[in-house]
Image 1 (cartoon, rainbow, N blue to C red):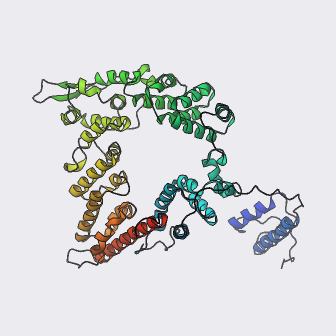
Image 2: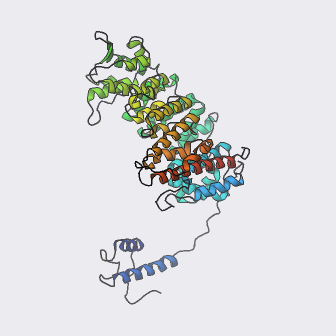
Image 3: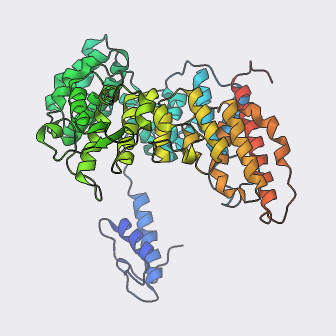
Length: 543
């Protein structure tokens, strides 16, 4: 019932927003519109809100009915097997924090398994059940890392739905043209029309699609409008040339070195330095070579370094940033950039015909070793040079396991990325066997999934050792979470013995054994669930 004991003035334009603001702030801090302060203010606020609600509802004017939306497009892909569809519904129903924020117990984290499930479903080429599309879009809305896989799986019907709900507009932005198919490189007229008149996201997607199939055609398309593009757009377009980067791109990239935008110049220089035969790489090799030499007058051949004394205009044009970050010396900053951009083969000739391992093993005078080797690490990653990566990583069991040049775990992980999957897993397994799990999290993240058998055994053995040490498992929760997602499900049978609660000793933290048993039970349960998920998506697999 609407109270009328206190007259309320008619709200002005924007009255509803004013009422909402007053309610949020409180009537003791803000006077209700048309009401008096004091004890009656809350009543006046409610009266005004009631009247405005009636006015808003009654004030709607009749309008022509909206046209019916076009029917949702067909999805020609095969439907999910029934068991996999039920599994998807369970994965989407799980929500972070549903357990109240306490201990995880032995239940698997279903939301963390959703990316893996989506990847497998996409590999099989399945279409989702239509009723699952809203939940899929909601999941992708909350987790940007899920969006590519969700949109690939959800297909054209998800884009149709996204046009009807503002909360799902991200799907239209992520899909070129809101789902419209891109013209192929052979359709020159449509390509030119979309490139000249399309939205920015459409143009980026078009350039990337053509670059993946015909690199030269994409470069020519970009060159045709380059001078008229905005600086921020030029930067995004230039980044697409990383795909299929080849010597034929050098003339265009050399022109980009004179761009008005510093960021565009820096990206062009980085791309050119990734082409060891480019003119920029040769210029950088000459500059870097003038800074590094071997001194044979000492008892042991030693690398000596003379950092640049200035950053001239030609260095800036080639991508050297003149101003160092706070706390970094100018000369070491310039030197690092030269070394990073110089082809690594430079050092074989410059340092007496030595190979990467011999070069890295040479002593370095005057505390320049860290700077020198860190720059070589970045060069090895940029040039995808596995020989130098191996030399800089060193043997996994080396003291500190950092190798001569890997000064951080992040750099080691990047160096591992230049190796093939099997070698990467072997190195990380050796690292864990020698040093345990305390520093292995980032390195494990660089390994292919599922982990190889030797790497999986190394992780499980290290977890078992940590359990026997009597500490709590919380320090290893990150590695345990990775194991749940990355360990080969076939390893589950090896873990049964670890699910029992071990006997506590005097050195054991109180209750630690129970926590470890719980963690291993969750690991085994998750591995068996992943195995079941794989069978559901591929019924031909043996049970």
